[in-house]
Length: 320
Image (cartoon, rainbow, N blue to C red; front, side):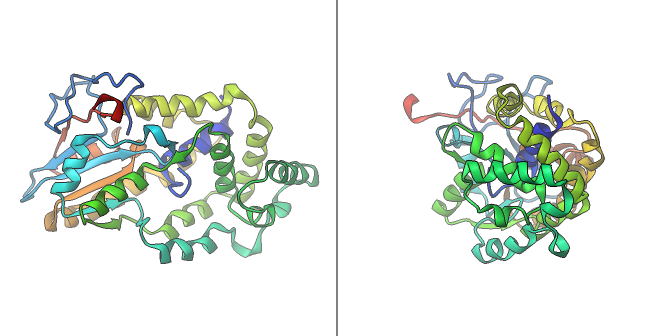
């Protein structure tokens, strides 16, 4: 599968929450799950997006949940287990505070490349015209005059969003609605400005060249299967598969895994050590941050916490 597809999919899974929990289509319980949020016996086959964090001096447990930043609206449904966790918690923490309109508006300037750089500065005239023609022909939500000033990976992510054949929503939005219903405050583990600054550490020219590659393959259905595979793993709550997909990178993307993923995981866990002492939290971050040796689950365990998989079956309205 093409690198450009992988890059955009990883960005959507891990970072780009402004454009992007469901079960499989038949809603068959995975790993014998029920909908009451009870602990599961942990094994290699355990599949769940919801985990309880306890021990290490915590007076009340907190809950860790894996999100995806872009999912078909009909699949963006919360489990009873997650609803119960939100109801019992004191606060909800997302990667960023998506409820802070002032911060969201302020970060728009941080989506732009530094030094008044534009795509025309980074690409050959032929490639620049190709990108310009693509965005103008597709009539994207943002005018090309604005997009050409954006960090190219962010522009690439808008292409994938436009190729999704359904009305999509971020899982974070659904979680925020449930938090507000329960009168829980919403906070962010990091600022949106910081998230956007991550892309300043990846050479703009590199990003621009990969944007061209993405456009070359944008209408290739085989390449779009990469994202479908990622969403399928998410709906099956298969963190092991999500980790495998995240690691399937080449041509230099592997150089940025620490930047996009592991460094942020370490920063979050350091911050959570203090936050969880003070209050019971629901911590909802991209599912790709959870698994693996450097994932949030393992880092919390290494810090002395007990992290337990919880039942997380989704009940859609058709089942009621």
